[in-house]
Length: 163
Image 1: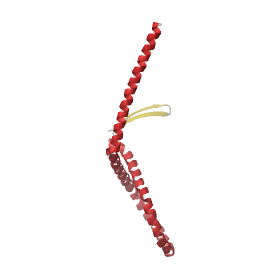
Image 2: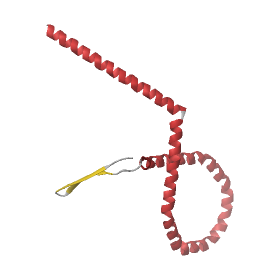
Image 3: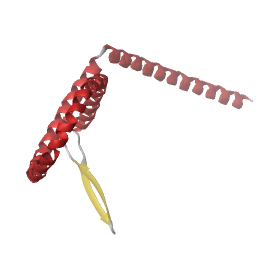
Image 4: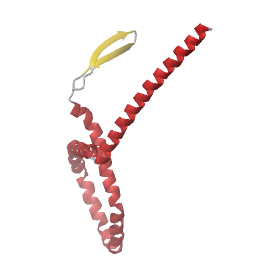
């Protein structure tokens, strides 16, 4: 659980706040997973663009032929849509929050799966292993450097005091 503590102090026209809130880590991670899931979905859509583009270009001649028929029906279609607009907008607004919540949850689930698959991949495990080895070597080098500096400092001190 993540924890935030609350404390408030007021002075003049300002107030300082500190707070404590406990929430499950899954809820803290959820926005990250949702952003990863949204990015993953966007990449998937982008990868389909070349195929979609070719398919849509192939459909253009048929659509051009249908334009005159659609243009004749346009005044009637516009009237129908305008008359239904209040009911349609109301229905869409009431449905919007549910759809947004559902989409957010699906992105979070997708992101969690993607992050898990990345964590389990051999390439990631190799990178983690190499990073740990590099950190260990860096810490050993830091210790050696510190000890060498201390030795040099002691030698300089001893040389200065013997003169």
